[in-house]
Image (cartoon, rainbow, N blue to C red; front, side, top):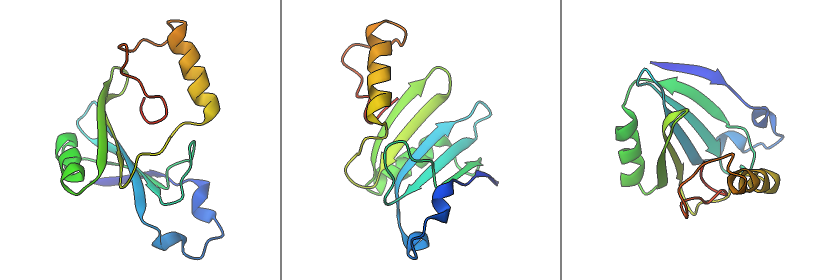
Length: 129
């Protein structure tokens, strides 16, 4: 079952070809009940953009969705978030930063002060977390 949650203001861009643009970034989050929250970003998104489409589905398990993305040429990064569960960020091409410069600097400060705990050498704040 598919339940729609929100649409961003990006849908109201004055681009006549907006609806034809392909999805180039997908984020998956496994929920406690086993359903998956999906966020899709169309071509042209930038760091800090809201998702163009977001919904929750229980039609396929999280691991099957990630496997399908990998099999179909998406560049996927998965990780476990103690607050949100299993997560995946997938790009249809080369990964691009999903954080703004300010967000990266703020997170970097949180890591160096010990406020945000991560394993050494396992963080690239531009793309993940």
